[in-house]
Image (cartoon, rainbow, N blue to C red; front, side, top):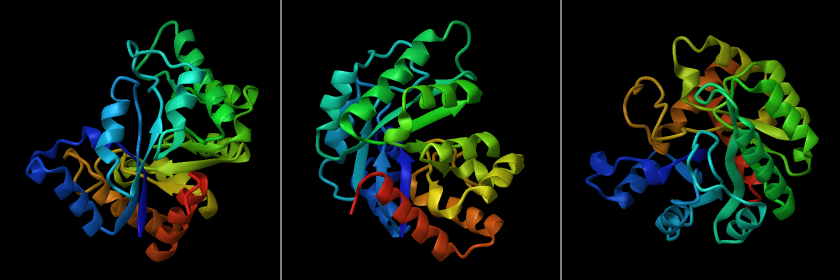
Length: 257
């Protein structure tokens, strides 16, 4: 069984599934993916996303505002905690810092990240952290605002082992996406080899980052097994052991039985 710890079900183009959301979920189930976390990226779409996944016992969600969304409605600690009380919400985020897509004066991005950390601590849920080209500031803010009290995951992680190790020391998990299958991503494979199995998660980040041999096509959670296969190969572990461990890790992180 696989747990896709980070996907965007509400943003997947259903054209390949006869415009039928149930058919998408059937395809995912046939790939032995039995739990999914649908990630909140803005306040404007949260209600629609939550209503979409509500009927499905295997799908959970998070509440947050992505660091790349400059013009999104700004969250408050109080509002994020209100959303966290809703059924199926098991994490705060996606949040974090992105100095690759956003440049210039980024105090607004850091302030938004702090709001999410404080909300996670207030409501006792883990953080889902997006970080790109912002290693020092990401770790500094996690430390300064005591994110170790709740932990979380650095998702779609492509930074170096030193940052991964520092995050693990703060109680965070490291999640690997389909990028690990890309030919030019040797740095990701080198880092992923070193992550302790008990701190490893897998994800698709679908509809983006489809793993080889589907790179460039619309991604979906049914392909998370390809991420697991590549990780098992490069780490010298059995697919069964890696799938079982990452499934248990995700359930533990998100407080699921």
